[in-house]
Length: 395
Image 1 (spheres, rainbow, N blue to C red):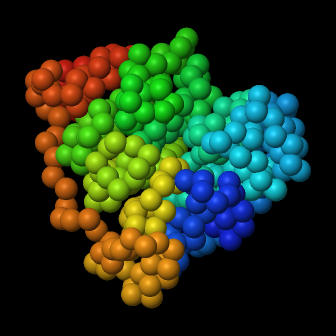
Image 2: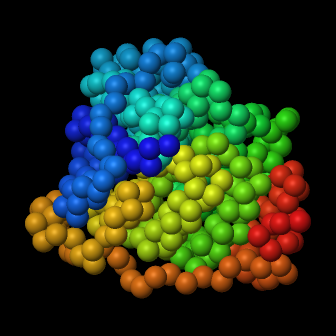
């Protein structure tokens, strides 16, 4: 292992653009990269920023049907096909759609290849994390499911244990669907319950099928969950499962739409709560996956005040460069030009977040978060050789 961090970025990533008025704005990526450069995250030894080519047809067809890929190509030329989810309010067509979506997938594939070949220890594609795309349909602003395509690339290269952890406020339904019967892939999604948030899936009983029973893990949290409850649920489920599974590669999707300023969910997270989870996952990548850690972007619709700060926390964790207290004044001025709302100069939302770790016998049925945790542990822990009640899940 080289110990390096590889960040995939190309200015053409902003071509993935559903147009004016759409909540998923490419501006969020532009401002994130500008902020990262402004605080010197890419200047550390061993950090490289690189471009990648588009995903090849063979790589895409491991996840998506040829008919769907053909429809995306036609959408690039202006043909809407709602039967494939293309040309809807969520997924408007745009010129170059296939090229833009395959470029996002290609960067995630290149990141996976770099980790598997030992060319980098950590790899990042913030333009990725498009976790809702299905085999034959665009869904939830996602055209090609780059995370699933990257996992399929790892399996084709010989990996037998890949773990995927999704922190987006919305259920990672497309990645779960792609590997629901495959025991070589552990998928974990921590999200707002489908009872109150699209796509209406991601309940504990969706736990995998056949030889993969227990391999699909869903923590469905109530709206209003803040940092303390979210981190309590995260630490009660994710670390014990990753330690039990011992993946060869860890992929993480860092959608930041659970932030309290994001209008697309009812979670109440801060960038500091998210950073705590990033740190834990970084430590786990070294503990269980020999450091092989692939970080993807995902949702995040407060494009100016939240996404750049949250994802710079993720980049900071990946490259090992601490963030300063405040953003550079020139970045704040540039960001302010895109909104009438005050852009925070502070890169943190507050002090370090505290939470009550899960302990044996500590779960309380009177607390909604604890009920969600207990339902998840009951659904999947026994299948993974873990005790439902034990602290940390250990038998």
